[in-house]
Image (cartoon, rainbow, N blue to C red):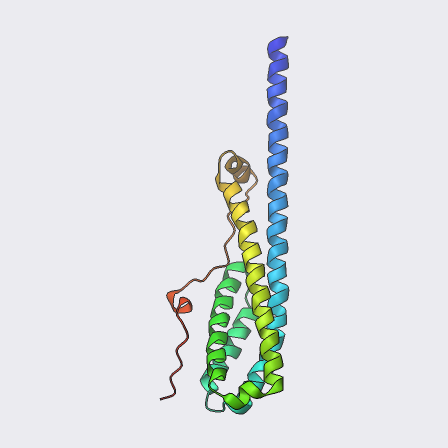
Length: 185
């Protein structure tokens, strides 16, 4: 009788642990999706602001057509991304294109003095900070999720219920890590 009670207690402990672990994964998965959604909202604001910014710069920097086209092309690619991994890669490309555009704008004193441009620049700067903060939060939550999914005994529950590793939002290439170099020679 006592061995049966001990076995029942052990089974009950395992069931409680499995349920708590499963619920923990669900909570982290939902936090990850919420964090990604916060990034998405900020990115949508940036997508809406970029055409105005490009048009303002275009009026002053007519011979910078290639840089302006790269920004618009990168924006369109990012907007049309189908999944998180593709979106992250396209967002990194857009960030690089925007850095090039910022560098171009620095070379036009009249543009830097334009009130419309200053307002758009401030909005874009705030959005970039918001996006960076959202990415940090997302990466923190994804790190918790991935750690739980890979460490014993959580990896058992992760394997049973197919909780898969989620990608971090990070810089992918060496080109994106380098400073933008603008040459007008």
